[in-house]
Length: 575
Ligand SMILES: Cc1ncc(C[n+]2csc(CCOP(=O)(O)OP(=O)(O)O)c2C)c(N)n1
Image (cartoon, rainbow, N blue to C red; front, side, top):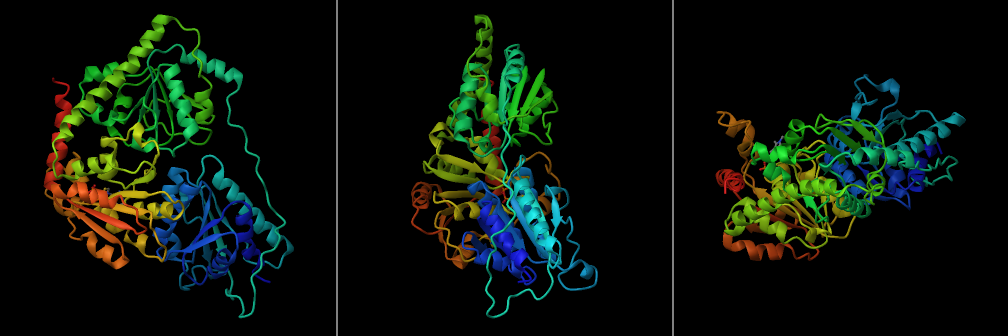
């Protein structure tokens, strides 16, 4: 069969563990669509909006911890994958992107749905391949199989990420009426033996020697998926080495009692002398981005003597402008390497302990101030979210859309009680364009409750996340509807500009009830204080249907509330 090498791509994917596929409708991609749809070991789903489809794939890949293949037709369809590809690139999530294309001789010939697709995703894929377009050569199959194997491997090598395969296809694209698609026993499967990402004994000794020089050790976790064993080793490391640990909500370190989670809140308000006392001598980081601008500014200003970043390999960011050492191993291996405290002098031990206590003291002060602040029941988006986060199910995935929702959640903070909770957010590029679709991908590939908290702009932007035929019984969405981007009302930038309302906040009038009706979802609304408790109770009942909870809010109250919050924290330093 002429298209056999293309059909066999699905076979290689299945055998290499790429068992989830998203396909978007089109003609040029028909051979790929049929291959993935008919392969018995592949779960294939279809989504019509390519932008949303690729974010859904991202969510599935994060949830299943395996690459997901995504297929689209030629032309602008491919470009619509780009936002999710960029997000996957910076969140280091493996995707296998197949874009169907015209044969090379038809590019730039005014043919329909034809654009320049080679390297179309530029620097946001790990590599871009183009498959051969003629298959009569005996080496063509070997070539295609080699590329697909290599692409799958590459997508999973550290740092994981999206890999693009452009597939020029010649007509006829559809099989004949009685033609059956079968999958060959592919001859080429390249398996990978992973290299060990472990420190040698000599490395450990040298690092330990440096480590023991310092009495002020600060560990900061960036965005990462939850990893139980790793979290435990981080906790033990901090305890044994008297290191302070800071992790905001996307670091997934909330299960550790010692994690300082309110650094963003207090570093934004405390006086310089407090900051000086918190300044580390040795900063140890792992994971990716941090949300907190205040933490970034603090670390950039109060530079440590040494900054070690732990990362198996690859390009390394230096967001605090202080990096002095890259440690090429897994975080778990690093933190397990220094579990038993060495023979250090008691006074040094005491000094170290004092430093961690300083961080804990600021954390406790903030928790106390926040308690006072939230004690009064008020109807504001911040207060309702506080209540909502306190009522989350013990085991669930919490998806935080970009803009204020991820920040509110970070201010509120999760506790050890939330240890069954996993946090996800598109902080690779911080776009508002695919937050809902990514949570849909997660909800499709796990059974636990998935709760998305989103602003109205992010929610309506990505409404095609629901434009498909799959049930999402375990997805419940909270829409904080302040009718615009409240963030532009809260941050310093737009300030009192005349253009603030029209061009930054961009007031929008929609409410979520129509959308809920359109898609057949349950709809709940909180528009007053007295509705909060009961509505939240109903919202957290998982009864086999998607639920949308809209919190009616307004820009003015949100702004005032946020200012009051910051003032409360500031005042706690004056008392
Ligand atoms: C794709 C994309 N376009 C524009 C932005 C810039 N942006 C950041 S926040 C925001 C407004 C978000 O509003 P909403 O989702 O209602 O959340 P709120 O600010 O009210 O919390 C915009 C437009 C972005 N992050 N991503």
